[in-house]
Image (cartoon, rainbow, N blue to C red):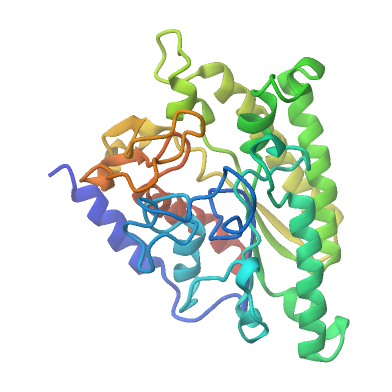
Length: 341
């Protein structure tokens, strides 16, 4: 009966799918957790346009950092969209009405985050890309004012910040942030920068914005392999990430109060400890489902993944499996319901 909870989650997710789209369009910003192919043509080690990525995805390896769907893909389905939200790198005018995915593997709140990996589309650049889309919407609807009236009604999903730790703060070989800031100072620094970015998004027409908290980065196989002092995860890393999540929770309340007609919500679903997923049938916690490259922690090109992927938390050394993404999306949807009332 170990798999019964998984089927219950799938049934619950099906019941949550709305009968009509509550939002006319869906915009996705962030990092590799929701990247759907924006990095494929970049000069970077943070791209996964090859098998065994996409082994369970309808179109194969598209640049998603998992075996199947991301949490953003599941949310799009639950929000009533018939098609996947297209990546900005491939978007055409004809499909703009449904929204755009701007996310990029390696990206962070800070523009310099992930630069040692090669090219990436930072959150600042993603916002500039959204300005381009706004201009296209303006052409589609006649003027900027009419375009923003439509964008006011859309949902914006922000999944960013993990790389500011994994590929910045805890990469002292390349970055000075850990020497300059205590964990609390760094969390405050990131939150202040993110606040300015969210205000910029608001000025571009966004009103309904979901900000995802960071997951337990200290539980990733990459971090666990460095030693945990007897704990299941690296507690110091999870504690540092928790400081930013606390800041984000305060931030979204403040922005909702300060910005007229805005509705920001904090989405806590990403912050699931692996042990909390035992009830969903997930058993393999701190090991990758695929054989990984030593330098990148990503799956070896053309490798064979584990046979039963639905019981694994991590697909590679950093990214969750499709099953975990489904659980995250289901829990996230419950938070997003608050934007529909």
